[in-house]
Image (tube, rainbow, N blue to C red; front, side, top):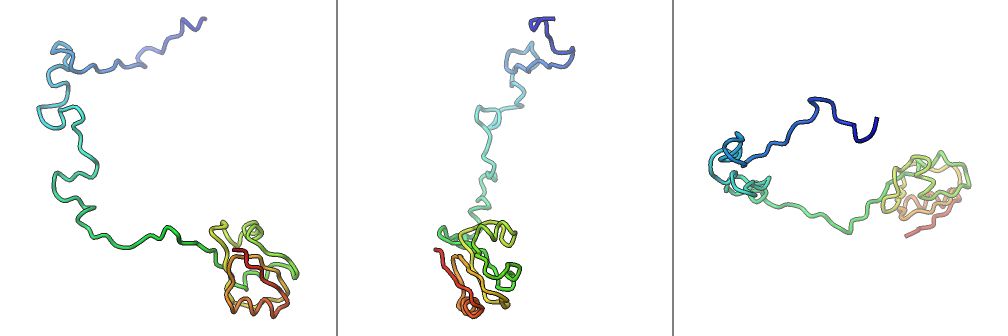
Length: 147
């Protein structure tokens, strides 16, 4: 068998409908587009949001709100979530992502002061609340703010 002898199976290929090629073809005249009008013309479709000339919904409804393009999304953690780490360990964004406490690094990590620490920890995070910083230093740890 040669590649030149290959053919598709019988009945698997349909012929393309050639419209507008005379009345004898059965698709002449209006070329399957019905009668005259906007949709019979070339490029005669309307945009998806077109509502027949009435004021579109996007223009009828009031514009509300504001999306700040400079907003920073911080991952929030409390001190009681840091109990799982052994005393003296260094905690940074990569470690928090690896152990599953935060899903992704976002724009930074902020530590809040809910809970107590059992041992000293060194934290390398973007922001720390005043209460959390006091508790970390009281437990013998330190905070390095990486901005």
